[in-house]
Image (cartoon, rainbow, N blue to C red; front, side, top):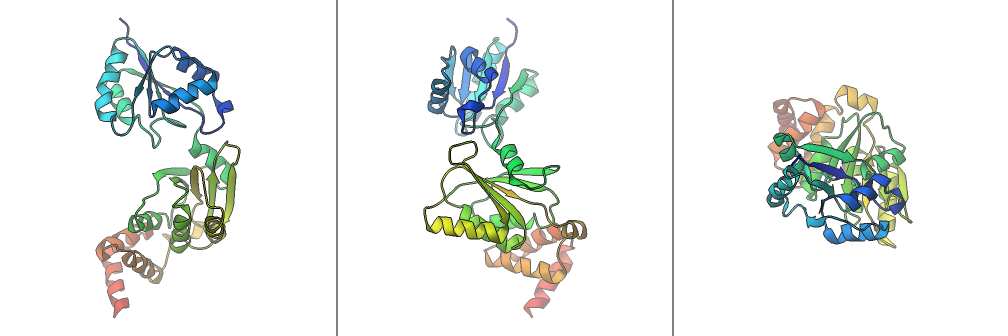
Length: 287
């Protein structure tokens, strides 16, 4: 029997009208639908008026390692395996990477039915530069790790896109303003393609003020994408801050619980400074 294939199928991130004819056909005809959540996949099929011919099986973060071989066996036997996440493109901060890597290593066919993506949708709507960008996945939850991540963006010349929960976005924006400065351009995209879609654009200080006011009032709800604009040309080309600025940034990280040597290494790398020189400058500043 001829070998089958794996199809990574992007699903709507909100509006079901974004579903392509190809996605509908794939959901109807695939031999196996490997879904991040089978209940969500069934609701999607129902909403699209599709009756799946094949089996729906769970393929998520907690069982991905175990389910890969079973799915590969299906492909070897000639089956078409459609991989879907709850929304957007599989493998992009969603399950699927292990399966794709294993299939590629084995020489099995892997293709894609493209569609909606929260990453590129938020980027396009942000009003920030789109010619060069980076996607950093989910923002670290712990304050120290979050500050280290943001410190690495001090001289970043690309727009950066990341995911965050509505419960944490206000706290994150406060740290963005603290670490990257009040004037760094940012955008928060909420409930993309849905009825209550909202994009808030401005400086870090302006968007932070919006988040604080909203959090204290009606609250912030829905799926959140944070877009951080690139550093100013001077900061990006000059390696960022003066030594005094770098010393101050080390202090911010240390106050958040980061060990001194680790904080020095993070800030030095962000600004192109020598760790030994910065470490000595921190000691001198402490007296």
